[in-house]
Length: 233
Ligand code: SF4
Image 1 (cartoon, rainbow, N blue to C red):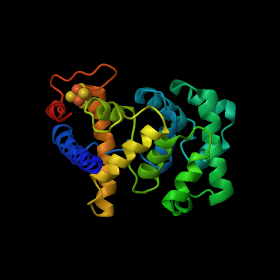
Image 2: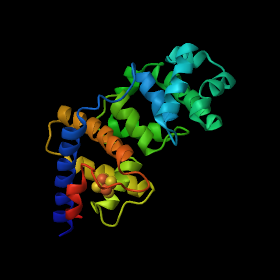
Image 3: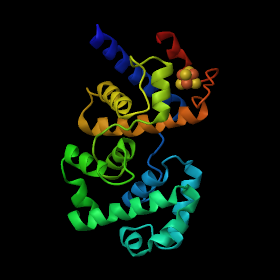
């Protein structure tokens, strides 16, 4: 019974993806010019609106610190100043420095070398870094390092809770995160690997789009493209 319910939820996730794609179109994520910029954005966007991240990225670009070499060369104080618009600078600046230190010490300063290690090993390594939780690790892996992993976030958690896609409802903790990732994996499990990566990419971007437009702290279901699914909840 439990697995029938889970399969049904996975099918609903597929339909939710298709519906959102129909309404919002391809999102062309991640909004960045380089893989390293994706990584910086994944750190900076924690607890912060994307517009603030854009200001920080513009500061970093102007200072020549939007590359691995540039970030390596900038002092911690200067880095804090540059990323001030994104907030939490005393946590985020050392975390960015720690990422580059790890890259230099263990992977010859190369994102290609880092991305070549097996998915599970890579995820565990990223999760040991300061300032990296599951969502940041998975976003870096999917959007910057080319690994086929789903990304979950608070918007997806709200949708899953409000549409009763997972029982019990996913909590704001590691277990809740893992249940959302598991459900997303199941929804796209039948796809070939390369198409699955594209679906994970698009699905995360689309849930952010519907979350911003309708499914914030207070849901605005009227006119929401996912209102049709509430009757399945
Ligand atoms: S706003 Fe309502 S219909 Fe839209 S995703 Fe949230 S709960 Fe569902």
